Amino acid sequence: MSFKSFFRELWEIKDGLTIKPKRGGEGRNWRSRTRSHIAPDEVPPQPEAIQQGQWANLPPELLLDIIRRVEESETSWPARTAVLFCASVCKSWRNITKEVVKTPEQCGRLTFPISLKQPGPRDSPIQCYVRRHRATSTYRLYSGLVPSENESDKLLLAAKRVRRATGTDFVISLVADDFSWTHSTYVGKLRSNFFGTKFTMYDTQPPVLPVVQQNNQSTRSFHAKQVSPRMSACNYTTGAISYELNVLRTRGPRRMHCAMHSIPVSCIQQGGNAPTPMSFTACVDDQCSPLPASKGKEPETEASSTCIQGAQVQDLGESLVLKNKAPRWHEQLRCWCLNFRGRVTVASVKNFQLVVDVDPALNVSVEEQEKIILQFGKIGKDIFTMDYRYPLSTFQAFAICLSSFDTKPACE
Image 1 (tube, one colour):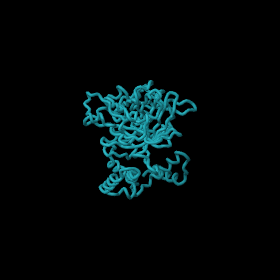
Image 2 (cartoon, one colour):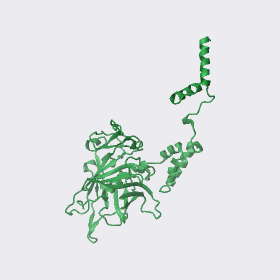
Image 3 (cartoon, rainbow, N blue to C red):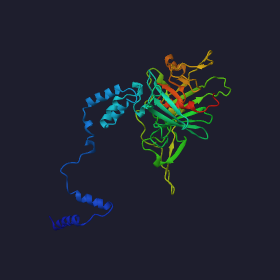
Image 4 (cartoon, rainbow, N blue to C red):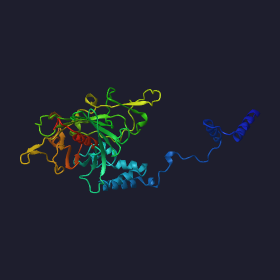
């Protein structure tokens, strides 16, 4: 070893013993350099190798059998909360629980929040009820036939009516105390025109199939810090509801049509399937980009409301259209009547049943055309029942029912 090399190593050892580290980034870099000379005897464990707990070490076959038994035994709320507890133990339990739990179309039960955006069962409808709170202008959707005595029913969705100068908004959320569209609990909204005859359904969940996005749609400005990273800042137009005018009141009860832009009419044909999302969107739309910030102001972001109408649903095919079932006039009771099979007990202008409205050339069976997709009716003061089935989801059915609560002086 040369004298110059020996002197350099000696000088480095001296610096490591006497010189104190500086503040800031230089001190941290200095400590990392001096400690790098000492190699540990054992390699530190990687994050993947860290155990999740004693319950994570169960054999997969045993764990699968346990969760499957729990899922089959707890079929209604609040007992079905045990299935959610299984998914909350650890990552391995959550993955197996997601494999065991089927969609509402397959099992007829609602379990996870994403189930509210999935189509209902084909054979028997899912039965729910809506409770209206006039003081707060809120509407809460619960799972169950009728309200229970102890009020322990499962809350599915909640909506709040917000009046605007040009119409009304029904903001829909997963919780009953937060209706801010900047939070992850916001799932969509329903907007009406000034007369309450036309409604537009907005959904934060984009369609399952890709569609062409337009940049010339309505926009909304908001601060970038207010947007939750787990929600989509865009509102996708997934449906339109219209009520026929009845100014002279000569046409009887309300007449409504629902165009579901995110559901193709082919889903009710033989072998057809409705789009089924398997998870919520986890990011803001790519088109949302920050604008140049001015002095003293935070940068704002524009989230374009992607609309799926007309030519934009070419990948989905022709949209599914629903119409209300025509009631019959009862001579003895002197009123319009529908057979709600005991689920509706109070006469109201809000009561309705929806069936599919298809072209005869589409070769849809008569049984499918007469099948009631959604029915809504009153059973008490501020209490209504809502029964829906495939191909509608809980969110779509609830949004359609909310349209009946808006004032319609030109349709009654």
